[in-house]
Image (cartoon, rainbow, N blue to C red; front, side, top):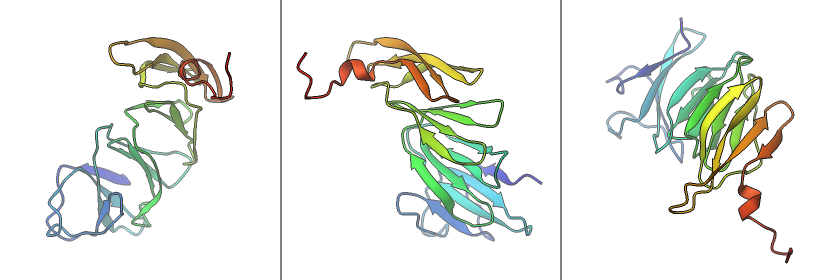
Length: 188
């Protein structure tokens, strides 16, 4: 049996409902008719429960992590790690992720407005340094290296500089954040 399934709507009855929203309130279908990303999680004891993850402007995706019992949920750019047996998110991070790349070793690479987040196969996550102001485009993940364009985000500019980021060594080459953000104490 799969550990989760994506639903088109909230079930009318019979399950526990959890709203993964800013305040993580629980609700019943009578309390809230907003349907965003609805996922049914299956517990190891054979029972199931449903979560309604608040959608935003970003990407929606659900994926199993091979090195943990947690499920990764990306809802509207917000990231959640969910253990189906606990009926609540184990952790929550992000907010602006709009692309996801899958690495062969089970890691996930998330692209945000200013940089990357890497979710390890065991569910741990970490952030790259900031290297973009307006998002990332043309992303490719090959041999544990992410390449693409870092967009400056300035109106009418459309300027993008190439970058590469090694997710093993955490070394960045290129990008443009440092080009625009200079420490205030440097006058030259």
